[in-house]
Length: 71
Figure 1 (cartoon, one colour):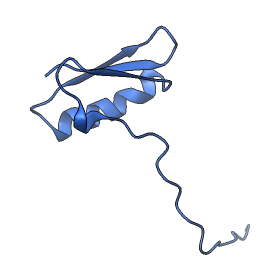
Figure 2 (tube, helix red, strand yellow):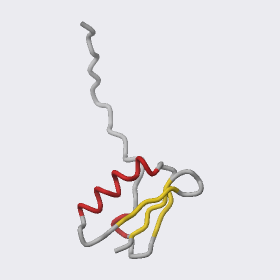
Figure 3 (cartoon, one colour):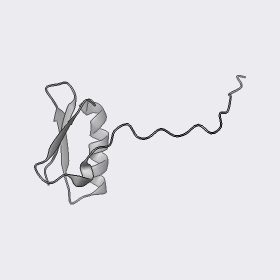
Figure 4 (cartoon, helix red, strand yellow):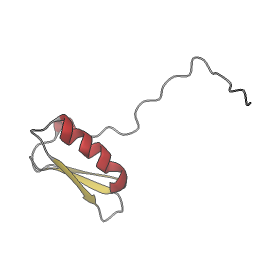
């Protein structure tokens, strides 16, 4: 059995992506390098978190994804 080394006092890195879902108004959008397949989970989370708001994502021409607030 392999012994796993335990590290101490390693700081947790800050989140790499901070998306502006909380500040978006209807009609706003943002583009990200994250592929739609990965961004869909984040969009679904916010759609369930705020049922009175609606977000959709589509593949952007740059190969990443664009997210819109539609409601």
